[in-house]
Amino acid sequence: MLFAIDVGNSHTVAGVFHNKDLVAHWRLKSDRDRTADELAIRYHGLFQMAGISSEQINGFILSSVVPSLETVWIGYAEKYYAEQLCCRPIAVSHLTDTGITVRTKHPSEVGADRIVNSVAAWEMFKDNLIVVDFGTAITFDCVNHLGEYLGGTIHPGIGISLDALAGRTAKLPRVSIDCPPKRIIGTTTVSAIHSGMLYGFAGLVDRMVELLSHELAPEKNHVNIVATGGMAGLIQPYTRTIDVINPRLTLEGLQLIYARNCSG
Image (cartoon, rainbow, N blue to C red; front, side):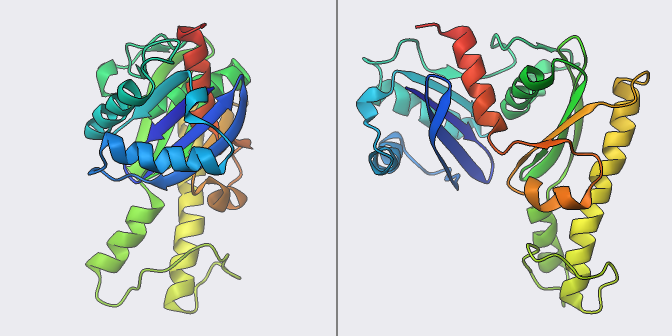
């Protein structure tokens, strides 16, 4: 079984694959003070709840945008799985054989999660595509029809935008936006924030997709758009450009990269 982990700034998404099937997955807060032994306690307990034995893990792959946690996770893998892994633990970077080529000016600056998402989306479409990831930041990643990662854009995420509103203003509260507004014109402070966030970020998505698509493939009438991340399902109903939502996109990309690099 393959243990695949994506460490983000806010959350860590982990999953276990049996062959190509995702048999269990979890989403937990990223704790920068976590040790390798604490990871073992937490995840071995989750394995047990899912009917998985840690002794069944024979593959390990990680993508991380938190360098300190990448070190801890690799240490955990080497301590608890060393004798049973088919290959050394893989930490994805721009140097990893992923099947796509990173064509940015400084490839080392590209987050591992952005590369992994692009790999999974390329496997889906094998054509011009844009990945929209609703994480701590909202990222747009562009891959052309040759399977080349060209770069993209980065924007403040929904959560940190809500935090900024509440933290930097005297009267605006920190609110949940999972209840759709009945109308665009907000008649209360809370409904105005709901409308501004949902329709505003949907407008951001549609405008960026329009601009990026024109630059990525000006001769095409349509570029494939896939969204992922915790807020994707919340924003998608208010957009007109997202074709597919895949909340497991990063885990699927990790599985593809592992299979490419370790055939054991």
